[in-house]
Image (tube, rainbow, N blue to C red; front, side, top):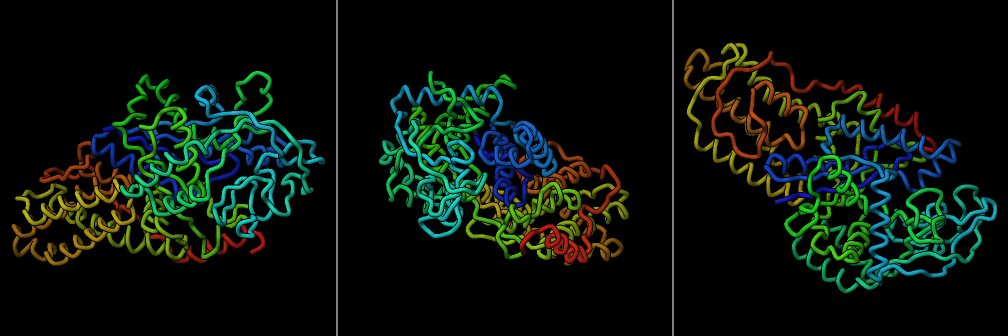
Length: 548
């Protein structure tokens, strides 16, 4: 079986914040899990270097666009690496492979009869002397009355056209835009309404899409799918490959989602491997993103695939997280109300971040990142629960057995519990219930700590060494299995434990017996975070923010 995992592409116009990581982390958990299962995995993503927000940022800083994209692409790659993201390829949308492949997709859709030309009205700024891309227009959403961009409302998730907005203004200069006629290419999404309806109903019956994806997609379809422009008068992006229209660009909503396929092409070029096995009927595909990206993955990308006659490659799983708030307030990059990833990585361990964002994941509803909860979670669960069990077990062996794990026969009841844990957590992970899987494993850790206390090895080491040997052996057996079970979630601590226990390459298969000697002097798996950091982090947050 082949597994394709596509992580949403962040705009290379500013640093990543924890909201980005929360929505993207499930992709890495899946990739690591399936690799441990021995499956063939292709996990792709990259930086979106063609979007309007990047052009706006470059204009604000008065620097070339490439300076912005190079800066943030490098920063993104470094942050993902430090967090343990195991992409098979992390690329960018301004490379030649992407441009060429997107142009080929455009031409194929046109050849298949799904792209046509149309004269339309478009917002035009007389002050800036240019047609305005959708994100250059801001105003009031006609659906909910909130502030919105010209392409989509973040509050009610309605897909918009700039002309729909009330009280329109140019994002660049603040003036009220006029409306002029221009010619653009359109994609016939409406032709796929029946097939998309059947497809969504099938996914709903299978239960492989998050509820928010089903609900929002059904809403879009029930409101009627309208053909969408696939070209824009943009300063950067992929040129329209049609004579006479080279000054126009392929619109980002068709260009960016095609990145999943173009990244696969780039990966195949770099590795010499065949990408077709990841785009066929024998592949299970997962798409990982936030709630605001749902329509692009459940309507637009499927419509493109249908137009390319690649129905067998339609998304199987839509893993669309809800939003993360910060200290009970909505994240705001414009107001600097955010926890920036480069910043948090300077002071906290990646496994701590991964653990909290998974156990507190907004899988079904919005959740809040609180510095108090983050630090107490680390100290009580990672350190006090998991770290404590590992440390006292291995230190006991180091002190009383010269680092050699005692031999014993594996207790059948313990082995049955371990095997059940693999099965249950496996089912949860494969169905994108990562929070529940991690909760299940940590419930087992609490039972393991209870087992250690009940066995009293510090006492039986002198009173009944056989009992002590058996108890310690089983604790190490549990740790060895936890190393594998937690590797998709906590790769850094699992790698450390694998080194200490001299484990073979980690697999998703119960370890039924263990013997060996600890490879290195045992150190704490996690260190306590001073609770005074709570106040200092909150103070730092308010000092950096504006208008709060």
